[in-house]
Image (tube, rainbow, N blue to C red; front, side, top):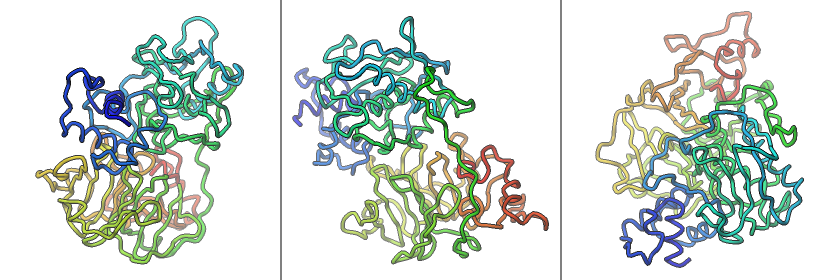
Length: 507
């Protein structure tokens, strides 16, 4: 990719000021600004942040993608969530749309069906309803165009930019490049349903997400025959429009709607490792890039499902007593033990490891208690004793001189925690001994709920049988009475929470 094209790419998608879009305009780009733009692109795309145009960075820049900016507003590098909200939304939940210009190479009836299915992706998890109209004013106008088409944002032919859409404050319309080979239910070409579902996310107020598995990630990743909306997308759309409360609500034409799924009432858990139920204290917990959750304890590790421990676990690890672990935005998992750390890609060591923590994480102490990537700003946080450190790989130095700071800044979280993570439901959790705390990122305090926090980890996270679901106000376990020692009554004991009992969503 030539220098001029790189400038165009970085400015077009929000990493450089628009003044650099034309390299002949006389605006000179200094080295620091150039490297910072590359680093921000790499960080957003989940690559290793080097500031250099390596092969992996160039390859990702060459992929087909959405034409909407990754960074809405040049220079705004802070994010409140991993999903991103543009800042506007529709004030009504019954929306209308029209396909005013169809693609040249697809059957119109088939296109109608795919567009309705794309809208139903978002109505499955909200009370939004989408109704097609053949005439009159509509909320979202859909057109298939080529090259310059009247909005000042021309398409570029096959590949490159596939489509773009406008946020609600700008009208919500969606345009698709008709030079693409749009296909339906085929691995070749460009899948219309997946691209349309992504663009309609913009039409509803979502910006691009830096979660690679999210629908709202900017890069087209090919046809997925078993499509599911990522939890990151669900959190984003429900932040704008709230969770689903009414039945139905797919496309208003009665076709293409998807029946919402609910977390089923759990089956009685299979017999678990007695050590985890009788001694719930863990060493570390983290989410993998594909959304799975693992807990480490001694020389064993456990895969956690929505309501218990997965069958076939625990499994042994070669070197136990992991201090901390987290998965970063590049999809790679970091493990910390003593003075050293390892980087993994999936289950394989990703390079020459172990390395000294002081070498790869300058400013962070050895012998950590916990680590996590916090959803509040996407930075890495390390915890030890009564203190915590914030690590930002884009900054030099990565740990500011104002750190460490007291853990008491995280109101309600105790010192000397065992583990921490942001779970796939968007909440932040801290673990200590046999208890866990759910942290509210907006009020920056431990959540107020009934039953209160902290709660017993064994019951809520591991699905252990005949274990209590609450603590009394002194922090001791509240035992069931002599007539309520079965799991049904234990679930009823927890049913005062705001969500479906005994599901990870009510953690």
